[in-house]
Image 1: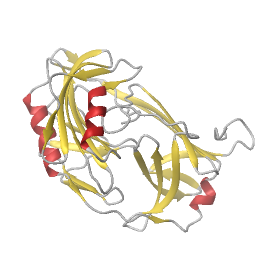
Image 2: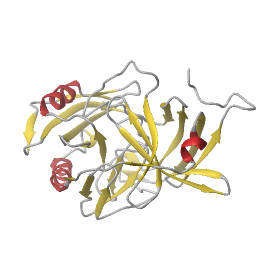
Image 3: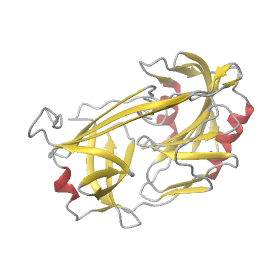
Amino acid sequence: MRLLSLLAIFLPISLIAQDSGRKDFPNLGISFQIPDGWVGQENEAGYVMGSYTDPGIILMTAHQTQNLDQLRVEAQQGLHDNEGTSLSVDGEISKFSSNGLQALYQGSVGFQPAKAFAIGLVNPNGSGVSIIGMSTIDQFSDKHREVVTQIASSVKFSKVTVVESKSEWGNLLQNARLTYMNSYYSSGGSYGGYSTGGGYSDKEIIDLCAQGYFNHSSNSSMAFDTGGGFGSSFDQNAGAGKWKVIVNNQGQDVLQLNFYNGEVYEYVLSLQDNKTYLNDRRFFRTYGNVTDDGPNCN
């Protein structure tokens, strides 16, 4: 997962948009069941699930790793970034069902001692998924393993037919910079010796270049960069990956970012009073015509 922002990840959380039940992502050919007592929220990097009563979070992301050997290599690499996150495999990596691997991790997240349990599933015909449940060491329990296992067991893969959009969005977004800025904070009491106050601060920039590649950055109070199925991978091609505008099953235009490391981000596009919205979030669309606010396409 790339740059997923959440401030109070180890505490019972209150998600702004709360999903429950079965979730379906037809453009990725992935569907799964949110467990009872948990709610979810989609963001630019993947899907986040939390509970009102259980500490910790579940992170779910798509990847393009299509065989178990490569998935094992990525799982062994662990999760590491420059923001206080360093999780290494704790024990053996074992098989999960016929198309997955599972492993325990231990280390730190946001400079706090943490444990995690992850399951990665491969899909030979398209995007696979990684599901990671994590919490502080003292609050991590078998419940996190059970919830991750329950979600992984509910995953269904289907064939995807990508239809490229014939709308004007492709021209509108060429050589454009899309910028999103948002922040939120709330204070509260304490839970298990920790303050339950929390919030987030997000800034996301997407530079869409006419040559078909893009650059992406996200500055937040907390960040992860887990590359492919579990670990990190890099590419020497221009930008961070390739972008295009497609049509989803509901007939909506969708900006699709295909990172070289296999990750896929998708944003439903809409215009309201000539203002640009991605997944119902307002992004400023600029071209650098007046000030230095154009895309980085060098």
